Image 1 (cartoon, rainbow, N blue to C red):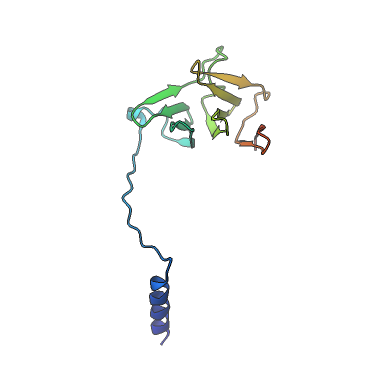
Image 2 (cartoon, one colour; image 1 turned 45 degrees about the vertical axis):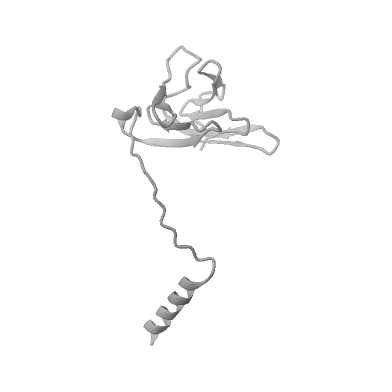
Length: 142
């Protein structure tokens, strides 16, 4: 008797308006180091408003346009590179600025020069980046 009730309930739920049975074809790609990723462990991802996929790994930042990878690394002594190779967070703000939270601070991608602007957070790790309703970008650690 219980099995009949369960079957009846499942039939009713399945025939209710608004119930959608969609079988969509999704394509998944698995990228590896040989494809252009600097590290297999991905920590963060975000799409910018131009459709670029930004991938933060444990050994660098990668920009993917759907066809090829461009990878960015921290270069000691060069303040125009990312602050650290261990990326914790990638965030795109309302103005399409790409912010990167790393093990040693935060930086923003500069499209015009294909470089980065670093912001002093005293070498602290940045795990979280958000934007307030007034447009201020805020960041924090653990």
